[in-house]
Image (cartoon, rainbow, N blue to C red; front, side, top):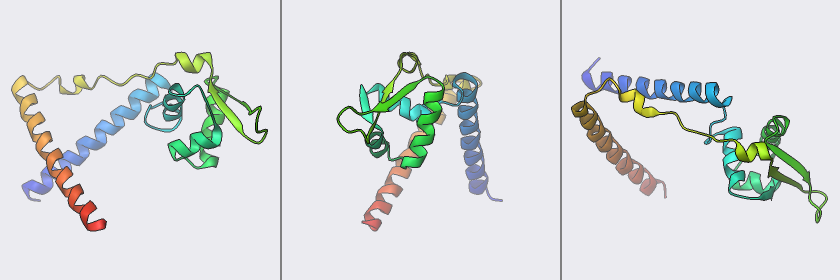
Length: 149
């Protein structure tokens, strides 16, 4: 195995471990309510709107109706949302946050602790290396987009 392959494997393994840490943290602290996924994503969206039809919410979040219904059922069972029929269109369900849903604060893990074992010089070196990798990824994605379209 050459050095580049080893670096790639180490990078991907670290990414995988960061994801596992992220999911474990949300699981421990919020019962798995990640603001970027599933139920957490719905709560985050509903905070921006007073009330919305279930159909519109599914369209905005790009979630299939059946999947959205399952997620909303869980949120409703846990007291975070309420659903009721629209007074103007009896076929439509309106989704609203409850007081519990409005007061629920989704937080992010403190990722700074991941870098606790690094010196300031090592942190800066890592930051610069990640910026270079990010720049390279953006160029590669741009090339792929140009070739695709």
